[in-house]
Image 1 (tube, one colour):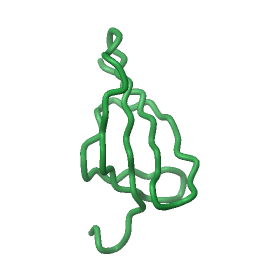
Image 2: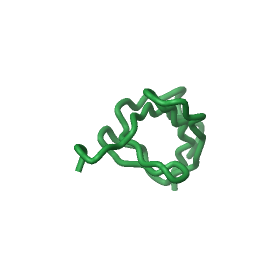
Image 3: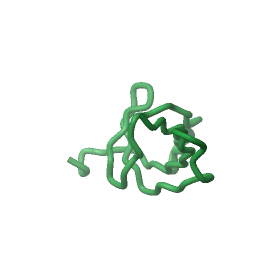
Length: 69
């Protein structure tokens, strides 16, 4: 089973972002919850080629708002 190490970076807000392990690759438009806030994924980039079952991903997100529903 693949493990995706995802570095989330938030644009448009002073948020520290985070690094998490997921069992799936993030997708554009996906809603993610980081702490008590919700965000929308707007960019997904492979940081380097996979190493075995480990994938290293960068995901840029923007704050989620009611217009996204």
